[in-house]
Length: 404
Image (cartoon, rainbow, N blue to C red; front, side, top):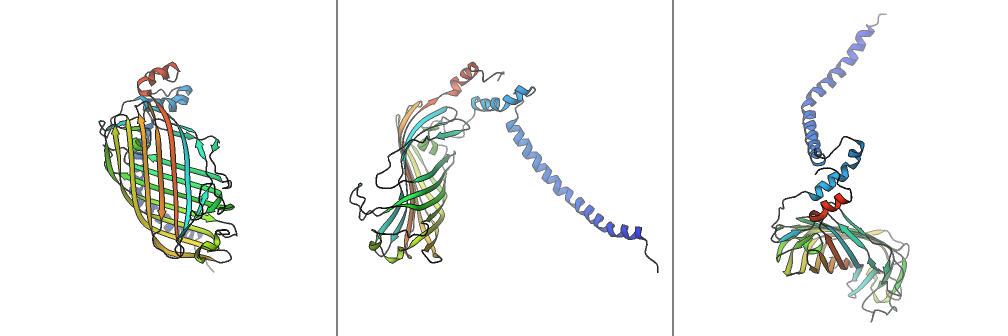
């Protein structure tokens, strides 16, 4: 019995896989070349932004000090503006220190269509006192654990509450995240005054997690600045306004452990449509449009911005002892409003700022829902001109140690 040549079999077995791999590699050379060129272009762009030939890089000290020197160079170098400077003055290159005192408002409401009553779930929030500073590349805020202003008879709320507003030249984005444990359930239909606790149900077992994003695009950013209206980096020098358009998204999760959200003494006053609910999830998203305007009278600025939107809302809920249920997708209406009054002499400024964001379902299915978030801020601040005096100050502090 004869056997084939083993060397030939081995060669024939591996020949075609090798040829296949070779052909794939050859056909991919052009694709790899394109990827390499894209990576190289991206790398060159990053290097051109971060690597400056004039900044020393030879010694260990030079390399250690390079990030600081690069930052100082960006802070002090002159730049051209893409907006009308007769309408807007930018203060991003100044060091701005601000002390804010704010009170936040938050709530989730269930509307009973059969009794026309509104069940409100609210945290017992505080006033917060802190400070923040901002300059060219950084905005930082700090709120120490000093809390005052909680209302008596409303229980204790443990909370993580983050609200961030990102102000760009054309785009403003509000981002919020709330995590509350310990709420009180009430209805204004029964409360006669602020100290009336007879119809308030304090619930330490209720937990709410919510987050949302609201983004608006400013069409006439060359003459109208949202930063000048509702932040402290820009100053609106002449009265002006602009139309805006945007998108929004919100998500609320409410849980009551194994107990019902609606209990005595309020339960008899509401219909079975909202009885025994102990979990609720509401997701909404849509488009919005509006208008912002800043009126300038010498050193007084009055600013307003209003955006109204519409979209869809998905509601899931469960009752104690039953499986989760879903309501049909419903129309949701969205309101985002801002207002501010400020005295500003380009160095010292003070005033009051208010924001309000609301999502509401207008069409009745089984029950309607509403969630809102608001904030009122009293503030005082001062701007330090680093562009004018910063180089001298930084040199005296030893923070500029080479020839710029």
